[in-house]
View (spheres, rainbow over the protein chains, first blue to last red):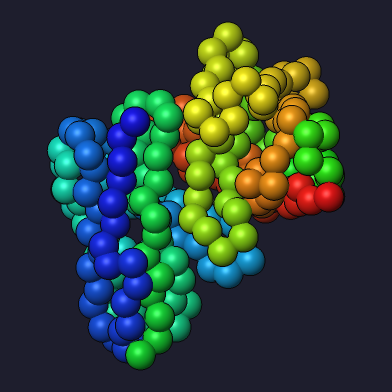
Length: 107
Length: 119
């Protein structure tokens, strides 16, 4: 199975900050990587697919990069609605696997 | 408007069974692969199972293989998850999720249904 490791597990940031979350795959997944945002008590929301393609309707303050085994999610100009938990997920091969999540909290 | 609505969750004793349903609307269900993803209380997301558009291919996480069975009825736009021999560690919110047709990622999520396994 492909293991997905996110870092950090949590971070504190202020409104207006730029934050970066990293995700590492245990083997090459080319660009079969998605990022999701989840708020407490809510279903996840898809932000990015194919490592760097923004899902329709998602604001451009979210961006993704990387290929192979190392990926990043960057959020520019944090707003109150962006404080949430973010997950990466590989869909290169079954079983699909998620990172453990990164909780972005208000400083 | 694309919608996925799960149902069938509840409280069940260990070793008993439960069947979840997911009704789809707003898209051509019969052309889409669909997944189940779960989230235990206070934990992260865990992929559970997937089924191809016509039901010919099915995939499972090791943690549920042999106990859970995914199926679909394209005439009813409905996905199922038959869960047998339930364990306390199966307690979670279960989401159904659509796999996007061209790029194979999850693009739409249901709101989830809660399963609690407890004596």
